[in-house]
Length: 360
Image (cartoon, rainbow, N blue to C red; front, top):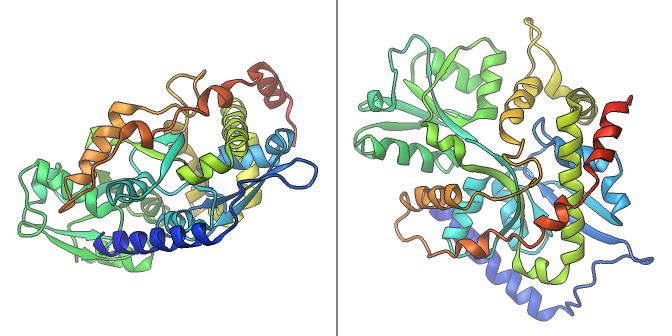
């Protein structure tokens, strides 16, 4: 985490220098008045199986109808996405909230204008035959993680501390990869007793035939997961483009909730490899899509993208508890609400009629 925060600080300093040297202007409109945005998607594949709100809005022309041209850029991962956003190379992005939280607590200027999904991105898992039934049972055990600086580490440490377990002296944390063959072998050969990682990594193990128990604390599942993340500079320079991005995304979410099958087909076209089924007919893509149906639907369907201030505060404080000297944060600054009224002011009946009649 320290290395990532140092890198973010350096990027932020560089971005300030570039901003001072540039002409600025803040005009995001193309000739003819069309707005444009560059949106960083936190994966090597532009659209993963839970990002159907953005994909549907793009596929169905909702952004175009709102006079917005969105360039979706695969950013490689959440760390890369947040770094590029802070450096000013992106206008917005969807890095995971743990990565965003680290940036906020590192004193960086990042803002959430639209909460896309809620739920645990990272979890703690054990083989079904391990005899480990709860977090407290992990004392003295070996716990695998994807990598030493993985986003799951902060949440694993917080979960251990909540049970009186020192993550440094009471357990051994071992990097075992992100759900591939190396990970499968480490768990199968009992080189580790548990594994903390992203749920997406777990799906790869499940489709390979591994059975795991989920020990993730329940309250983690109320945390914000992803959002439309930007900076105050972009908000100042491109407010109309961000408004259109928020509304188009809300429309895409509403469409997909009304027609799951159409959006699964969009995803299969965008990322066919994720939907290749194993011998039992199960694919990582469908597992991820099923999980997303528990995380993306808003608590209030008339307020798509709304933030949960209390859960976000608990979330940030959880990350802060694992840091030596977190920076103070202003929750009202981080959770920007000025775009949400516009985002939700669309004809829901029209979108749902389109979803009901959509034939591809």
